Length: 410
Image (cartoon, rainbow, N blue to C red; front, top):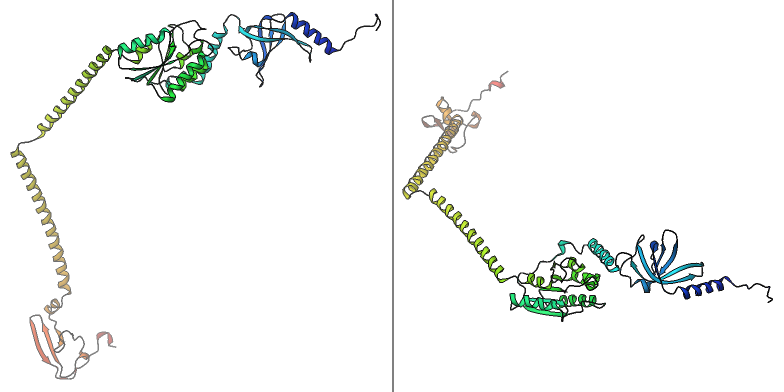
């Protein structure tokens, strides 16, 4: 190649050269900008653009790096990213590869706290209907805290002073550091698995937001929410609330206050017993007065034996009179019906016909056979004639003479 011949390289070679130069000179860069065009595909990588008022730069943050970010990025957030500058050869685009990210002006821990609080509240983990009541007289108290911190000593002092016979089971855990959240959640689950306590105190002494981070994690929050044993959150922070405080069944500002919630003061119990005794006495007194009033009312309604006897006699006489009246009415009705039937029988009786001058004729040998026509008789028949006042025997001496009936005449 002569000196006048130009040096020709490929596009790929040039992009590789540019990439090497960029990565060598911008290996560690802190970059401030506003997030836009955020995309989070199924791979878990983050792709976004960082921009300011004059320029913008494509950025990527791969899953191995973004899993360490304590908040979820959103479009419009002002962030500070630490990473390196590189070149994406396929498009020839300069891009920023992020290794860490935090929100500008608001710490990442605080932002993560706010986001987790919002998510869990929307899910219903803070709702009052999910809160369990504390047992009035627990026999066993489970404590999840550090074995060497001040919290366990404060809890034990209060419990032993107020209820000397109460049983205390400590599950020592880390309350600070990367392993703390796992320790606390596992201890809560273990208590529930073996049902070893009537109530749980979960907490630690006070500290900064970083110190309390274990109690602001979703892992601890869900362990508390899943507990069948009532949980008291006892993080020693008077003013600020942790996520554990919101999820727990009860919140105490300090470990000592949590112990006071578990076992009530003897004096308080005596006062409650006195109040219950007064209420019971008052209730019994009212019931006694009502019973006495009812008894007196019944006594007033009772009459003397003589009055009761007289009242029974009056009732007996009244019933007798009603019975006689009913009997007389029934008898009169029966008598009238009998007379009516007798009259009907008289009209139909043959004796009544005889009274009007008629006689009945029957054969002497057959007294029940009535002779109604002359053709029934023959000469020599013995017959009986019955009149209204008696009978007479007779004999047919002549041959019967027939006469035509009125309707047979021409």
